[in-house]
Amino acid sequence: MRSWKIFLAIGIVLFTIGLGVLIAGLAFNGWNFKVDYEMQTFTSEGDNNSLDLGISAGSVKVEYYDGENFEIVYPTSYRFGYDVSENNGKITVKPKRTFGIFFGWKIPEMTVKIPQGKVIDFSLSMSAGYAHVADGEFKNFNFDMSAGSANFGNVKCDKFDCDISAGSLYVKGMACDNIVIDLSAGSANLTVNGKKSDYYITVDKSAGSCNVSGQQGTVAGKIIDIDLSAGSVNVHFTD
Image 1 (tube, one colour):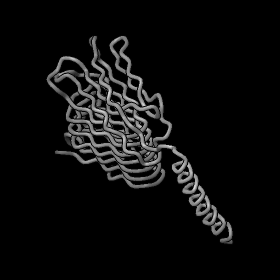
Image 2 (cartoon, helix red, strand yellow):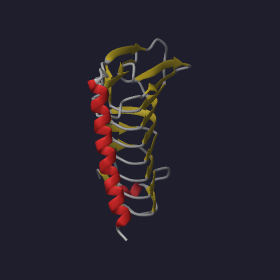
Image 3 (spheres, helix red, strand yellow):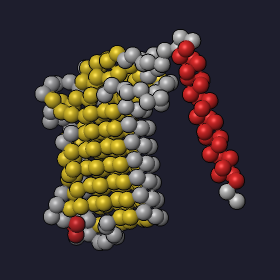
């Protein structure tokens, strides 16, 4: 009954040995596996009210500063890079090359600087990696993560909508009346400003754990909607 497991284990060992031999052979014959990165800087020109970040791997740090324009510093190489565009009040950052980024090479951090006091629609999608978003105020805050981890500071927004396939999310503090959490696996931990009793809470759970359950809210318009397939969701309230 366990023969298939034995064959699977043998196959994995043989594949690992073969991959090691292949890489060693390529290196012996002059292949260079090292990736040299060059940092590029984008500075916005127009009046932008929306920022859409797409991260394939590596790390990104979003922060505020005293400048008047958006500033994005990002890594590029012949195997890895981003397209950064500005159009109709929206800045978009999307991966354009991802070849060779899954061999453990360290990718330099992307830094995104938003003018202090600027309130924008913000979207962040991650295939893998790490994201840190500093304290800030937003209109709509959308977060989509396939894998990795994210750490957000004190976030104020009209709506917070996150979709996590795997990985971990931690939000230090949130002032928001409309919070949507869709978690397939991994973990989400949020601290929400205010009283739990204020919120109308719905929880649809297939498996996993959630520290809150469905309830009627006492304040109109305050909503927390949780869809949990597996993993854990923990929502804590300051009051």
